[in-house]
Length: 349
Image (cartoon, rainbow, N blue to C red; front, top):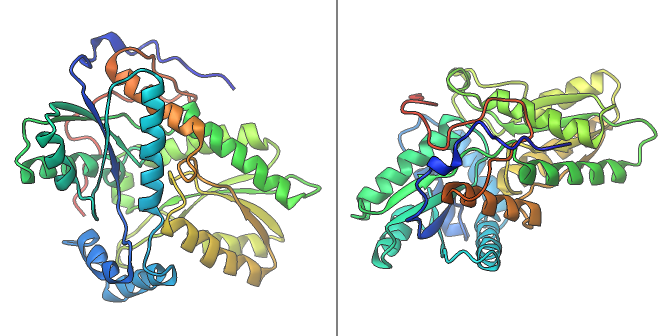
């Protein structure tokens, strides 16, 4: 497996001379039982989410004591990235802000302004292009800058990194480890999962195309003889709105009907093992598989520990914006621009 160096992209044209900070942008999650309802209300504000779905998701968080692992995972990524940048000689402090829970982006950006930051690059915990995975982060950053009264702080979002070697290689390794745990005599099927999105949103972005590219990269390196399927999880919209299908549990039932008795689940749509991964896959999908007599193992995500390759990737992506590192990508998809085109991945559901 070799990387494409992205020589069609003029890195020298990027203005990175004045970058003086990095902003890690997370989704956010509750850190105690009393946080769960306010957190979910913030996440779903303005959306037509059925009350029963909110109660269901709230119960998922309460199952884990009301604490999402996502914040601690972001803290670990921040510490590791700061160490990586320091070791590489980059005098760039790493800040951390969340879209939906403390530390909120507006709070963090206000601190950045107080500290004299004028130009930062934002690394978001989402690897793919879509409205919710990219464009919405840009909108949230703009709103947070305005709310903080920090319009003078320029923030450039780092490009999607779904096919960067530092994102793909950890999935290859963890998929091989999961296959080894199954110890099957035949190559076990690989079931790749990602967060479902409304079908109308999917039509306006490259989300599914990028996921399939990443799936093929991981599968070809980890177990090329295994069959592979891309399925979906975690849908949250009203039943009347079409979302990407099939759901992981429906797919496992189909697997059972076809006579399959084992599979490896690979959550390539996620950066870390947060609640949607550990509940939807390790709890719900595991229960479905057990009822069907299907043995499953799950691959881990790159940002959970975090994997050293993932942190090295983050440094490289920052160095791209500094104009001192070439783009690296493994898929044959056209290179995404360093700055999103106006109007790309728009969606108003």
